[in-house]
Length: 453
Image (cartoon, rainbow, N blue to C red; front, side, top):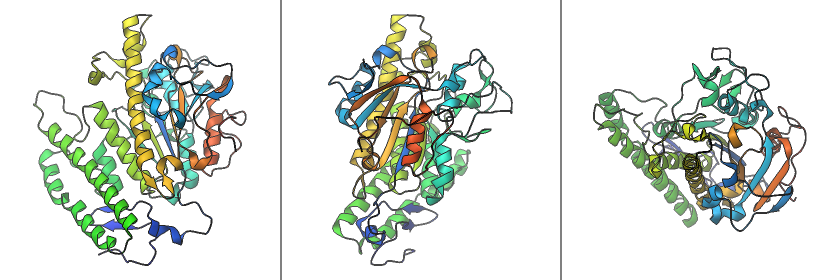
């Protein structure tokens, strides 16, 4: 066994096997080693982004401004969140001025993605001379990311390219990334569940593309988790009943993720040669893809492998067809509806479908034990888009959830004054993550109504 057992376990305790490394979730046996009075769980942050904006009548909540309790009946697109009504704050009135044209003409999709977390107006180019700004998640990662194995994770569900002209003279890199390590360096999201799984659990970032070579490697690695489970069984002899149950639940969840990835890889490897062949571990079904990615996020947070994740649920200007709900049309094409009621209805159904996936994530956060509570108690999550009505960049659709270690007052709708910078929210989130700043990008003050403390 590669683990030296003590009366109390250190927070960073790993199970090791044949090339596999699995960090453990927070256990009761780890708590006594913490400083007296210290919180048992760190703050986490997740940024969930959906593209192409919303139809405002299906999202907006009437308000005279300020804070009010959420209505008993949520707007249509948000209705999948009804069971979590008291766990949400719907924010209105926030704006990203950097997404506006500002003399550069068309290109709202490119600007929406690049400005969402940076607050900056991206340079209009489809060459190598990209220019946006450091995103808030990376500003936090640079300050506090050294406390975890990975400073941050950037994931998605849709393959994008990092060059070429995607939106009226704006590089595809602007549409395909919301996270920017530096003003000139975007962080493209990883869309392959296998790559994320292997990064978290030690299988390596890259697997062979050749099916035969891949099969040989996977046959060798098939025993990795089993050997780690053997290490876990030895560990459990020293744990109390509650911790044993936590470890069992966690490892069952890891096994479930792995089995689902293997199932997808098997299905994709047996496609007809005439069919488009996706990346091996990328499910064709959007629900399965998003759910696996959400489950991987849960595992990353649960083990404190990272505290910062951005999830691009689809790229800006996405042409994805949502056949899972009977829509074969391009999402982006539908948003240019010209008032066509049938196209508007399809846009609303897509937005609602995406919110259903968000609801799944909230449920997983609330069900996952973490220290003295659940992950939901120790995280802040935003779900939103850099586009609102008719490709505008003001009054952006945005939902805040997670209790943020008791700091956030939920169950409300807050309507801020017109053109309140989204960066004001980012400053508040940065401070809650332990990065004390008074200003970020175009922020112009503190954002009220987030907490009553």
